[in-house]
Image (cartoon, rainbow, N blue to C red; front, side):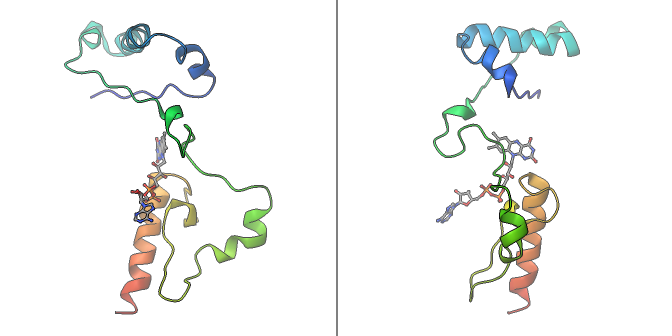
Length: 115
Ligand SMILES: Cc1cc2nc3c(=O)[nH]c(=O)nc-3n(C[C@H](O)[C@H](O)[C@H](O)COP(=O)(O)OP(=O)(O)OC[C@H]3O[C@@H](n4cnc5c(N)ncnc54)[C@H](O)[C@@H]3O)c2cc1C
């Protein structure tokens, strides 16, 4: 299985292309790296993240300047029985899968202490 992101300024070139033209361009890119066989995939799937209504193509959320320094300590503070997980609460690789897993483990441990 091969996967590629077409993001940032590259999307401005590839986004307006027809789906067929973009498919060919992507497969040619794979072929340049992995050989001719990549031009004939068993299946090809693409997803336009810029069309997502909430993320609008952004892979991570970000805070406005000053938010974390002013309010960062509140983001992990439980509110009664509500505990906050999610990658944005992680102190390491916030916004990414690594942060999501760390946040999940932290909250699981927090909740387990109350059982
Ligand atoms: C386009 C894109 C590309 C990315 N690429 C990468 C990458 O290459 N590497 C990487 O590490 N990370 C990448 N990420 C980021 C990564 O996907 C996220 O950091 C991670 O999925 C966050 O996990 P999470 O568990 O914190 O939140 P989510 O995965 O957002 O999970 C939250 C869940 O809560 C559910 N939910 C929301 N509201 C409610 C409610 N009221 N009741 C019940 N359920 C609710 C949602 O449906 C969702 O399933 C990418 C993200 C995007 C959008």
